[in-house]
Image (tube, rainbow, N blue to C red; front, top):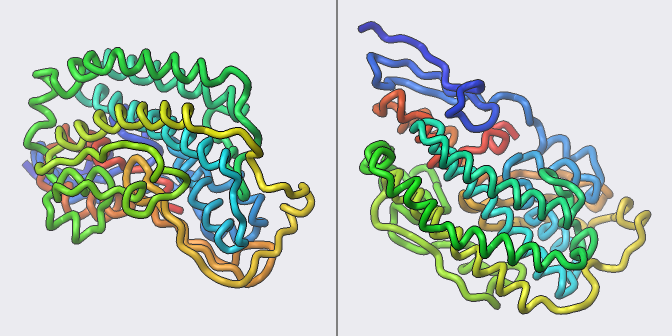
Length: 368
């Protein structure tokens, strides 16, 4: 057979986001491939230079649509370092609750994502139904379901609504009770095991070459490296949790780590709800003052542990009311761009959607 060009996405049900993978295939084997990020969400780094520090809070969540809160926290932490702001204690714990709910949301979406390419739509429907309940909780807390704009410079926008703790506990109990069912539907399902075991490998040497972090790294190098542990932010050093990792680098190991992280996030949220103190949730500043903040000259790099690895912002201030320069370290950039070009070739066509899903590719992080 002669080489043929095929397109995976953006309309393909197995593709994630608005990206497209251009594949040159021989039979059903991919010979060459490259990613076209999609140009839907683009130019964020340059756009931030034209907005005030606080106004950027409404722009940055779009750097990763399905996991927007990591942008808010990384950006706010960096600005707070430059400003020398001390965030109120209660705000730290609320931020952790938001971040772990967001982690549950993206892990459920990714886990349900393997249902489409494998024909297991029951798994996809269950996962998205549970994610929808998380969005309901976000709506109660922030007033919005997807882009929350809740974590701001100096704390969080407003306090938790009364009675939200009961709703969160109810959801966590429900999700934890069905954890074994999720495993049976997915990675312990014989039909799916055939598609994800010993396939879509990410060897140790590739991890170091590309700079892959998060679950992709932990499932290949057998080390529990997690920024929440090695460089704690918020109050992660005051809660107990484990970092799942593996000594094998196939797709099943990566998915298994995601599932185990779900249990750890449930535990972290419960601890936060117990330990969260009373008090203010934001540095007391006037609205007009926040919009005209003059941030001292300097530069800073702030990073958080997203569901896909290290997600950071390098920010430079020239002493004005807008950032002078912002650089985003997207968690999925290495495997999403370089990995698609260098290491997707050799896999089969039907494994390409699984490649994108288990590597956790978020295309706006690449076309930022």
